[in-house]
Image (tube, rainbow, N blue to C red; front, side, top):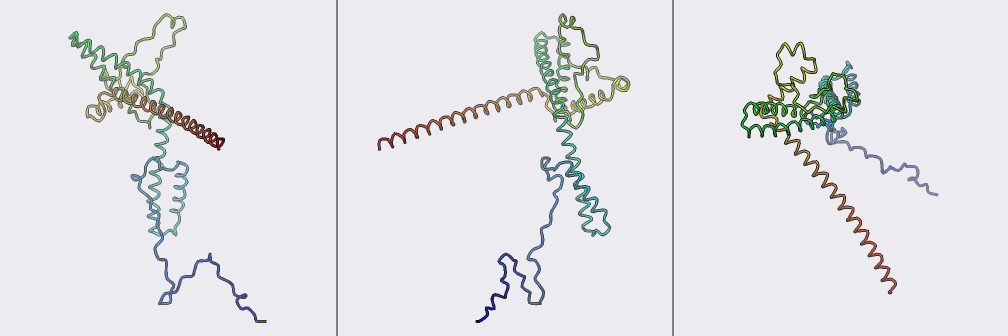
Length: 289
């Protein structure tokens, strides 16, 4: 019987890559295009949300430092690795800053809210008193109320623009005096809110050194910075208006969401009713047939 020579040969698999054909010079042809190199974007090009976590960044920094510790590293690769290390360290600093801001923002949110409400009440009362003083044409009272109103607005900007990277220093710290007894609390009324004497009268340098502690000094520095920014026009001179606008926007957003949800529910109910009507109509047609 004739032997089939094809059985002895191994068939080429269709999944194997074909071997590159040799060129005219007898050498094998290289790749058609170079390998894509991974480019690390600069810190300015990255957004804060795109940054990875702190633990991941620390691990990448450790790996990069191990790579730099090798003596056999090529000079070009060493330069790239050093650039990568500086970029990762900057990312780590930004990630840690973002983490601190997030924690402090959540921690002091309620304190800032209460102080903002107190300042709004004080501003409203001072505006009413200033209007009455101007109508009665008493210059002393009007000057006094204007000064207090300006100080209160500076404090409002203090609450709104306090840096979240630092521990919040309250404008209305709890009194150091002992709490009154239950009998006295029933008889005495709560004192009215007044402007904290943080800007006026202006403390002297001796008072700042002797009477002010570290947190009080820092609070006074931030208040002075905010007053300077308000004079330069970088911060609003009427921050209470911005707070009112934010409240209105939040209320409008909530109302629109409620309307949308109620409308979607109604549409869903209507759709179900229409489906039921179609179902019963089809049943009636089948019975007639």
